[in-house]
Length: 236
Image 1 (cartoon, helix red, strand yellow):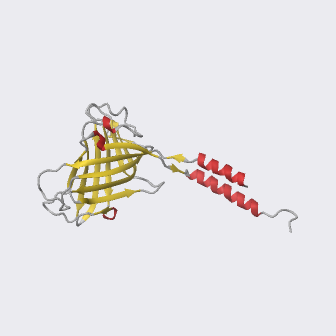
Image 2 (image 1 turned 180 degrees about the vertical axis):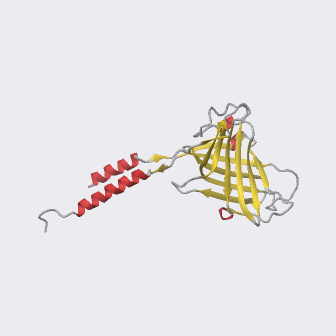
Image 3 (image 1 turned 90 degrees about the horizontal axis):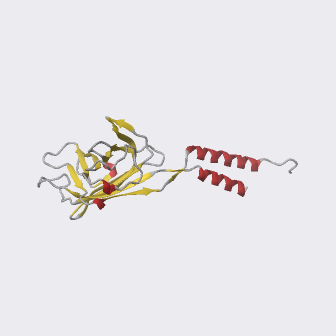
């Protein structure tokens, strides 16, 4: 019995899939334009956060052959916008294992326009802390680009990559949708990654059992239980 369970366990883990998750860490500085009051009514200095995407997400051609969108690739996103007095605005969005992701990754491999971007990252009021009054959603867009157009060899979604190759535009933007809107208050914020080390990329290891593996294991265990309960001939 113990040997059989051991064999089944070995089979189960051998059939598990290793999800190709990639984590991007970022730390940007707020690029302020003028002294217009912002929606938080506080000074803002920068943003720290992360994004996790699954590199196995299938892509679709967008507009031109060498641009692809990988919709639903994002598995997690977290951020903290801070100022002189500490955290101003923060939040996190994640999806359960096996569920469809959110947002999308866009890869562009064109002459002079090589770029890696994350878009449609929308957080609702219940996914954030410190949001301004009448907040409907907080939308983020992340982009790093290359000046020499040699950062990307093709438009496939990459696993772990070297973000320092993207030596052009490097920023993340935030847009706050409010209803009703408040005239005269900034709701669009831009944070720049001035230093190459402001963006880092790492692999995230996570074992995800395939549905077929779970079904096989369940059927095998059910068979073992049924066998043990069946009375032997001649037993009293």
